[in-house]
Length: 328
Ligand code: ITT
Image 1: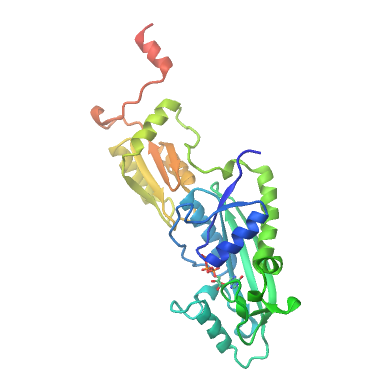
Image 2: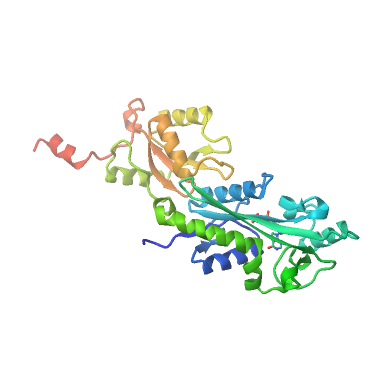
């Protein structure tokens, strides 16, 4: 069935990374950490739902790594706090607090409350280089304990009491937690969807390392030469959160008027395109040809008839044409 598919885990939370890696590997999914995939930047979570934020993180890491990426957005929703801190769980109490500080703040803010009901929610989203996405959700109901208990897990685990087992999440083993947790449920549902998806899609999963479909009939040799030349040129186009609009197309046109080979990259805040899609969209708009896509970068070529001859790229003509020219 071809090469095993590898996914980048789009999280910088070590607790989540451990749990997701563990659960996904049991489900047969091979994963890389963001560091292993060379992704360092953290996405800004501007969404107002778990789903929005999970998709945002997955898409950004997928675009940055050029590999399918799986993200988790999760949080604790407390009845007595009208569902808060919810999507703001990681930022509850502001920047200065660590996990212990957030737990203390939570206990303090519902001190004296008899309604201790709460649930963890999790949305797992996966983004593929071809733009496809998959999502799954999971929820786990419990109670907020009166004091922290246990040393396992992470985040709010020591204050999340799970009545069916009579312990807090921090008192459960990793397997026990995974079997009942919001994340365990979301990942199990996700694995089913992924399985179905993989049965019908192989193409979008491979890293986007090679050139997209040829459009103007360059030969393999010509394309290799252009790729070799692309190593030394600066990146002059940036596809950001505005995507590909008139300005960017004009910029690409201007650049292609001045030279035949140009390089661009897709920034992390661009939600709409990965590098392959950006290269194809810009190539269509400027009648150029994408000759390379690696990670977030892409290279476009357009033969020019206006640039002085000595500045043009001399591509070896295809062999057949050479023979004819030689008059043999
Ligand atoms: P990434 O965005 O990099 O994945 P994060 O910690 O910022 O990391 P979220 O925005 O999804 O992730 O915030 C989720 C917060 O909710 C997390 O920081 C914990 O405080 C809490 N949380 C989520 N799942 C949890 C769990 O299983 N146990 C304890 N706390 C959890």
